[in-house]
Each structure stands twice: as C-alpha cells, then as structure tokens.
Length: 80
Image 1 (cartoon, rainbow, N blue to C red):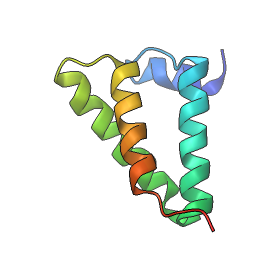
Image 2: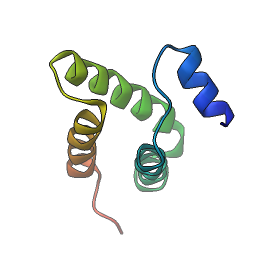
Image 3: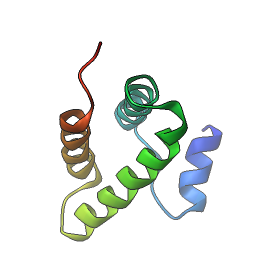
C-alpha cells in the first residue's frame, strides 16, 4: 500500500482502485497539458467535491467519477 492509499484511509475513505488512479492521473495530465499546469490541483479539488456531492445523491464512487470525467472531457479545450 502506497502513500496515497494510506492518505485515503487517514481521510476516512476507501483506498483508490487501480482504475480510479489511472482515471485521476489522466485527468490531471489532461488539465496540466491541455489547459494550464498551475490549475491542476484546483481542478482535482473540484472533481473531488463533485464526486462527494454525487455520492451523497446515491451514486457509487465509480459512477460519480465516471460522470465527472465525462464533464471534464466535455469542458477541455480541443487538442492543438
């Protein structure tokens, strides 16, 4: 178990799955390279808040993350 998994547990959440790690790292990469590197932490904060709102509405974490990823992809500027 790596640091990020320990951090998730310390925050009271379940550790990230391998698929979740891949999605989130890809999202951070897309924002950093497609928009602006310095806003990557802000975008991931917003994604986390959105996932928790969706979970409060009854979605699983995987369903919520998939929904947020669709939104992210829809708002990223076209690749040059």
